[in-house]
Image (cartoon, rainbow, N blue to C red; front, side, top):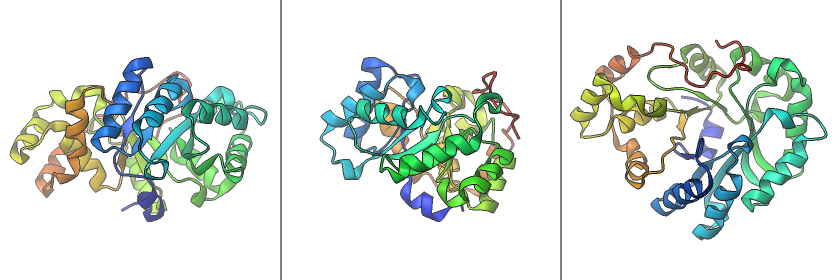
Length: 273
């Protein structure tokens, strides 16, 4: 299992808001909160922090029950921009503090030194703007560098793409060895898990859905999941994923689905493991 401290702080299942804008984002987050989600994930670049904030404010859910994550975009990494950009995010979210702030991607081409942006992130936490700090899309080399700079205890999670078709095994193994918590984005491979015969069969055997099977597989490894959906039925169904008890055979079949199929791979991405 992975980092027990972060694992206990970061709820195992959350609502992702990537690609959700305006009223879609507001309605999806409102529905998720109504259904019982308490972990909401957004980012500066999603352009929906305001809608997410409105949904949170209108939900009536006590702030102390919520776990809210945002991510600092690469344009805001410099010393003069990182903290002001996080303050702006907090204004949009109508919050005094987020629970977790992540560096969204390593600085493209290493333009801003890691020491600078991680240093600013630590200052943001000292100023009470965020409770926890972490990273996203970091490779093993970048994680080692981050550990050297700020210590592993200051990296609450590494949020990366993991799903049955991209199992990211080297990184997962490294995280296990280093006691580092992972969060999986795009855990359902933007819907592709619904079109897979193996996952279909496993789901049928358990009276479950393929997304539930995939999320159960990830959470069993101690990896948090933040699937995104606008449909009430899917949001409701995803919350039931932890009821699925996978067998050793199921795990073996899922293991065989890995084909290194990466979906999020912009031209500024790091050299992947």
